[in-house]
Structures are given as C-alpha cells and as structure tokens.
Amino acid sequence: MKAFEARDIRRSYNGRIVLDIPELSVEQGTCVALVGPNGSGKTTLLEILALLGRPDRGEVLINEKAVDFGRPETHRRKISFVAQEPYFFSGSLLRNMNFALAGDRLNGSDRTQRVGKYLSMLGILEFSNRSPRTFSSGEGKRAAIARTLCRESELIILDEPFTHIDGSSAAILEEVIGNLPDDRTVIFSTHELARAYRLADRIITLQDGRIFPWTLENMFRMTAYKVEDGFELRTGSGASIYYPGDLSDRCSYVVSLNPSEVFVSKDRIVSSVRNSYSGVITKIESSGKRTVHVSVECRKDFSVRAALTERSVRELGCNVGDTVWVHFKSTAMHVH
Image 1 (tube, helix red, strand yellow):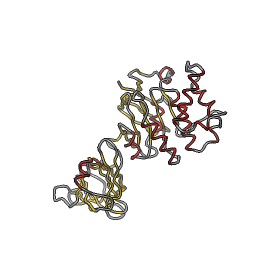
Image 2 (cartoon, rainbow, N blue to C red):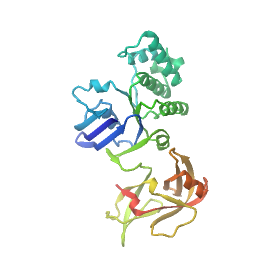
Image 3 (tube, one colour):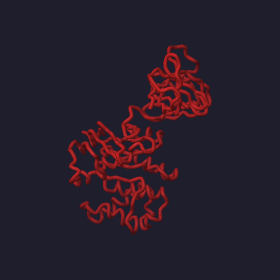
Image 4 (spheres, helix red, strand yellow):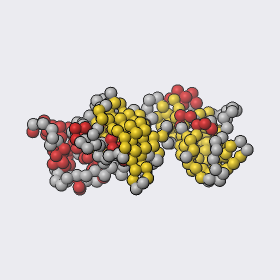
C-alpha cells in the first residue's frame, strides 16, 4: 500500500513556482530521504505531505485516500511532523511529552511507560524536568523527535533532523531512525548524502522544485565553448567535459552527472567514451545495499563520485591515495 501519494502538485510564492511534482508515491513501511540544495522545495513538499501546507493545485492521498484540505484533521492524526526549528510549549520536557499524548486514550501507567521509553531511546531521560527552551540544538532535536515518536504515528516526517547538531546527537538520531519498526513510514530531508544512503530505502532528489532523475552528487559550474562537433564545458581550473548537445557559446551552466554512470579503472581505457580523467581517490565509503561510493579528485574543482558495486571495488583493489581513471559517456550528463 502507498503511504503517501502526490499528484500534479504545484505551489507558487509571489508568482514564482517553487514546487512542481507531477507524481510522487511512498510505499508504506519504507524510509525515504529527500535531498537537494537550499531552495529546492524540500520543506514546502514535506509541509504539504504533512498536511500543514496546501498546494495551489493537485491532490495528496494518505493511505490511498484523497485528502480534503478543507478538513484534513482525520488524515493529520496519522502523521507526526518535526520542523527544522521545532517549537516547544512552556514548562518541562515531560509536560511537552504529555501534551503530545493528550488525544491518546492511555492510562497514567501506560503513558508514563511510553514517555520513559522514548526519552530513554533518545538519551534525554535525565532532562525530563528541564524546559526544552534551555536545551542545546542537539538536545532540542532529540527532544522534538522523542515527543513525535511518543505518539507512535504510522507516518513520520522530519525536516532536516541532522542540521545544527553535534556528532553524538547525530549518531543517536541516526540509530533511532534506522531502527524504527518496519510498519512506520519515514520521510526525512537532509543535505548529507552519505547519511541518506545509510538510512534510506530510497532517495528522492529535488532541484528547483522538481524531482530529479538521480541524486545530485556530481555538480559542476562550467562554461560552454563551441567546438566542431558540440561543446566543451570547462571549470575554472581548466577541467573540460565534451557535450554533444546544443548550448550557448561562452555561457555558464550547472552540469550534473549520475554517479551510477561513472566507470573506474586502474589504467586508461581506449574506447569511444570521450570523457576520461586521471585522478586520486580521496574517499571510499559504503552506502549499503552492496554499493560503494568512490570519490576521485581529478582537479581542484573537479572531483567525480562513482557508485560501484562492492565486487567491482574488490576486483579493482583500489585504496584511498591510489591514482585511477574515471570514465563516463556524454549522454550520462545533464546540463541545467
């Protein structure tokens, strides 16, 4: 069953379209990461899915039932939302936790047990009598998520839960989100791709309010120069990419490259591939699902990230600091 569906969603501010989603669906029981640069529409989309914002047009379905934005209360009770800057009521953390459970039919003992469970899970049980307004940013995020999880909603939406927090708080949040029951559906936004790969079953990339076909890991600001059979796109340091499409000469573009379309080899490969570069491996990290991301610095402003299988990395026998070649076809690039 689909937990969330968005159909033909559009939202504008001051005459500018900030969200344009023809179709989006999230399966029940999955964890989805929403990534993209600032201003890409992540918060706007999350607020619409949480039924806290209303699209100018389009339809949202929760558990395959259409939402009436004039009366969203029935569906909203199934959803818990944590804003990037969470709000707390006056009084202690315990008071805030109990307020979150005000609509639940729990007796005193069950309520105390549930509150204690989630405060302990987030490592803030000893803070229960303090006001959340005295917490650090990391403590505040943990408190907000404890309050949200305490409701045991089936649908959980978290806007930038890892922003502006310390490493220990981030590690706790990552463990908690990664170990939620399988019947919970989670959508969270983040700028950290490595964390998204570790936690999520699926990654959705937003760019300029639209869903992008792949994760924007390789992005370069480049200038186009006309050559005989296409264009040469160059970075400031002189790194260049051949592109066969139609561009404007000497204009600036943002170029993105799907990491799954990048090939890595120990030696240069003689082939029809026009784009091949030598560089040094700066990072090798596992992203789960038997996929490894290898970052290769070819020039100061031209580092390419490749998504390889674990088997490919073993067969290459490469390590951080090794010199390798990266290759990709011209059709693998997207020019904005």
